[in-house]
Image (tube, rainbow, N blue to C red; front, side, top):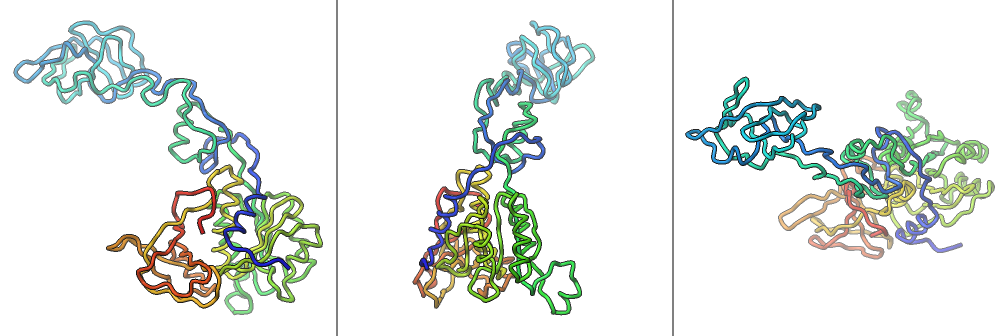
Amino acid sequence: MSSPLAAAEAATRILADVRRQPALRIPLDDALGSVLAEDVVSPLDIPAWTNSAMDGYAARGQDVRGASGSRPVRLRVVEHLPAGRFPTRAIGPGECARIFTGAALPDGADSIIRQEDTDEGAETVTIVKDRDVGVNTRKAGEDIRKGSTVLTAGTELGPAQLGVLASLAVAHPLVYRRPRVAILGSGDEIVDIDQTEEILSGRRIASSNTHTLVALVRQAGGEPVNLGIAGDTPDSLREHLSRALDCDLLVTTAGISVGEHDYVRSVLEELGAEQRFWKLRMRPGAPVGFGLFGGVPWIGLPGNPVSTMVTFELFVRPAIRKMMGHSLAFRRSVSVRAAEPINLKPKLQHFLRGIVTEGPQGPEARLTGPQGSGILTSMTLANALLVIPEGQHETPAGSTVQALILNDPVHRENPSF
């Protein structure tokens, strides 16, 4: 039997066997959170033409310079230009055009005089300030130049990126397909939440893991596929696992430890799965398994709710990110100050639920409270996992501790835990 692995080594091995998904074109409005599979080169200038940045009058700076309340400048209005209408003539000496935000600047004009600095008339306008000489225009191509690379392959598409693609008329961006992640819970003692009477009577336990994992997969960018809850029998597991073969990743919870009713590993082996490892030197979450099931990567998570969430963060989430096309899969660790002593017994690496806040000496961390792996409410309080090295039994208050911030958008290529 192989020795249990360290968490970082397990995460590295998992990613080595996970492959990026194929690329496909999808509707722009469905692409939020997807990752570009190609560089996007602009086919046009943005703005496509020099235009007005405000409502006012398009004029020649040399005609307006020196205008004031005591020395007003009077110009003849030769055209009205709302947004969407293009000029039909150039602006000559002593002339201007009434113009509105976004409208194209007529030839000859180099200034937009805001309407607040004018006394408007029907055919002429009187300008009483010259502060807008040479300003208030948006130059053609000042945002994007035709032929320039606007977004590179590997970029995650957020709202701003989608807006840029829309401005370039990219209706169907080429992105990496989101992985379909099969989720399977097991155990005779658990039922889904529609079994209200069984749950409230205390005869059965609600499968919180299923709904937590559906949310975590979706939040990570994958498409969850709920396979339901298998009973503690080989036949039930075989039947449920057979539905996972058209997915891209299989995640199971419970059933991979050494109990006499833990059949997941043996059934997978019987079905031809290649198992890479199944135990780690960490807490919570020592019974974590990984292998390939019909070519589909399988990650087996523990059944305790907190252990499920912690191991998902360390192992499943990075796998989903790589499958989606991200080059940086792992959250970074940051240094924080322990605001209270932390004492541990087992000689294992610990990932403790913590609350990181800004203290007088910089970021500091406290535990959420009791760290039992069944206390799911501790995860509702936590905004970080505090990483305590293997064999470090005592961490005095004031010590430096590494923390994985759970909402940190910054990622790195390799695990930092």
